Image 1 (tube, rainbow, N blue to C red):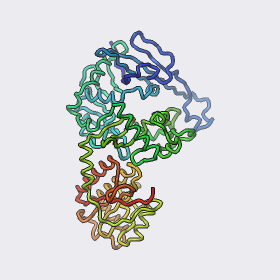
Image 2: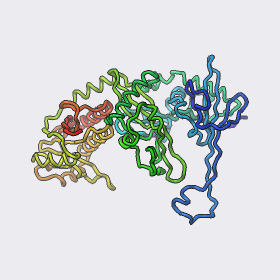
Image 3: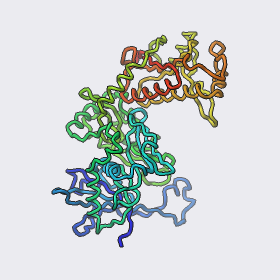
Image 4: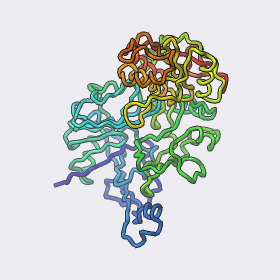
Amino acid sequence: MIKTNKLTVYLVKEGYEDPVRIVKHPADPVVIGEVGRFYSVDSRVRPPAWMTKFFGDRLTGLALFMANAKGVFVTSIEYEGRRVHFALTFGTGRHMLNTEAIEENFGLKVTLNSVDEKSIKSIEKSTIGGNGKVSKEQLSKSSEAKDFGIDIEQDLVRAITGKSKILGFGKTITGDDPFSLSARINVDNLSDALTLCYRQYLSEDYKEHFDWIDQIQHIKNPVLIGELEDVLIQQFNESEFTKLWMAAPDLVNWNDLEGFYYLPGQEEPLDDLYIEMFRDQVGEVAGISDIKGFTVLAQSASGENQVGSWNAYKCLYGEVTHNEREYVLNNGNWYEINNDFVEKVNRYYDNIPVSEIGLPDYDHDDEGAYNTAVAEADDSLLLMDQDPVMHGGGSNKIEFCDLYSKGRKIVHVKHAAASSVLSHLFMQAMNSGEYFSMDKDFRRKLNDKLQDEWKLARTATINERSYEIVIAIISKRGDDRPHIPFFSKVGLKNTVKRLNGFHYRVSIKRIHSLRD
């Protein structure tokens, strides 16, 4: 009887069938009949790096060793008259793959078409735009997708795990780029299993229960992708980073992270990825291939192993407007945003009231200097910047606002430098508004900080309708309403809706920047 094996299956893109293009630096393979070829790297037994990095030579003589086994099995099937290629990885064999040869979201689509929609165990998702948050949520019992708090306007599902409803896939399946399953499959019956995988990949059964996935459409047209990459490179060369940033494309165990290596000649790891630093180091580039020529390494703190290795292009995130349509780059893939959704968001943004509060032009070194100067020049405004309320236990700090007017305008100020900065601004406004509305202890602590003319008459309750929350954005672009990236508009829309639910009046304000 065939034993149960844990398999990780990647689909190879058309045009990459040559193993030299699938496997990095392939050595002579082991040929397994007519089924396929197995590529491996000799395992190197060695002491863990922490032995000498932390203890020096004090542990010499101890028999502590580690080794990493990794291999890739390249195989193919015949499907409706054409040859379809796959790569199965074993151990840490995924690091041997050329990521450009791998079909993105293959496993995700197989899983969506094969999973019991009421028996989902975990979902990994990323927030498009904003701070590019990547998160993985797991519930204590199998549930439906709606129970995972997916925001269909901003969240892109990257991976899903659940109970299989397809005989032959075993009990539990997981899909992101690869398709992972545990089933009674080995090299002798692999062809039948791969045929089933590919059939499920081509299916559109997912539209019955996961149709919202298509609100953000994956772009595969190479001509369109080339045009979008040209716009992206222009933004990169001009250091236009309001809609372009860098981040690790996968979940990273920050507790086991020494740092990132991604700059030419870099000798020490950096704590994060900074696109401004990357641009300064690599200079102007001629095309996207120049970006793809750089590798980003995430190094383990507990050993010599990599916890992540990506083409620098997969670490780029951005928004592009092209031919009056909106596109986003996420994890190396391009997506088109549904045009009805774009119009809906833009219409909502254009209807957010513009605050009548008078705020002077920005010509300062930073936001702190601006807020201080504004408060000193206007005796109706109280400076609250950098004066958080300690509340909620531990060292939890809640910023009430940056400026607070006698007319009960709660003003939050941020420079429109990047989508991540605006995401922080919206979160600050939301957190402040929620605490101010719902928590009398927070109001009491806040009142202790307010000067006499700004103090609350009572802290037991407040009338939220009498307060206006002002989202003030420093920007060179726009009129009274600032010009911000599309997904920042999505984030602001959600913030405004939430605060309106507490009965606050919410408005927006552009602070004209006189600086580049």
